[in-house]
Amino acid sequence: MTDAAGRPGPGPGGRVADLENRLAEAQDLRLRAAADLDNLRKRCATQARSAADEARIQVARQWLPVIDDLERALEHAEADPSVIVEGIQAVRDEALGVLVKLGFARRDDTGVVFDPTRHHAVASKADPGAPPGTVVEVVQPAYGDGDHQLRPAQVVVAEAD
Amino acid sequence: MTDAAGRPGPGPGGRVADLENRLAEAQDLRLRAAADLDNLRKRCATQARSAADEARIQVARQWLPVIDDLERALEHAEADPSVIVEGIQAVRDEALGVLVKLGFARRDDTGVVFDPTRHHAVASKADPGAPPGTVVEVVQPAYGDGDHQLRPAQVVVAEAD
Image (spheres, rainbow over the protein chains, first blue to last red):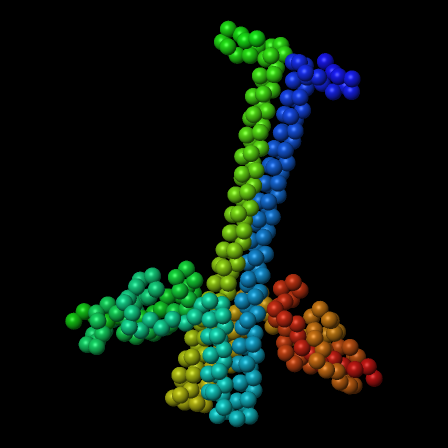
């Protein structure tokens, strides 16, 4: 049954044609969504890879001035060896500054209670001035905190009396 | 029209019921695909962020031994200042090694033809021994190559005679 313009009119025949059209459309949209999903999945993996590459470049780049200054200090040392200690101290401070900027500040754990998620005990010693189980000496400092920890601190822990 | 089991039989009524079921199903699948797409989009952004965070941590972590050794060299220098130059040279080599491992080897551009994508000319000079337009001196070295370049080299270029 069709009207004057050839469109399906009301009645069972028109209802079937209408449903067939809507079904074809819904199936088409579903296939497109599946294709979008597939594309996004591929793009997602690529995006994660390039985000990681970009991050690696950005972080590595920040160390170049440290190396430049290290070499400058070495050049000056050839002319006047007495200036090098000061120069190298400045380079060390610069390197620590890079880590602070990256969100990985050096942590001073002296005096805090030993925490296995943040400290590796390399030794223990009797220390009448320190409560047992606290850090009395940091052998190698930690950088960063919580989820953003570059490494735990290596520490010496106060023994129980 | 239904058969003995109450299922829609053949004929326009059965055809309509069948199409309605298939349409509902196709629409449901389409909505689910749209929801999957939305979830994946969110997960994708999170994944890229955590890939970048992880890369930042991995790269930054590789510099810690360099800083440790820098500090060790400074400590030794307090006892015997004459040893520091050798110690610092070793630290410099260690830092360059980190960059090599990260894929950003130092590049020696001396003698190559000037290339604006890889070189910044900071000066030019007459040099009878060098073909015009070639690099006669590297003021600041480049690290990395092609897409993986941390910085271009600062160079002095040979002038035309």
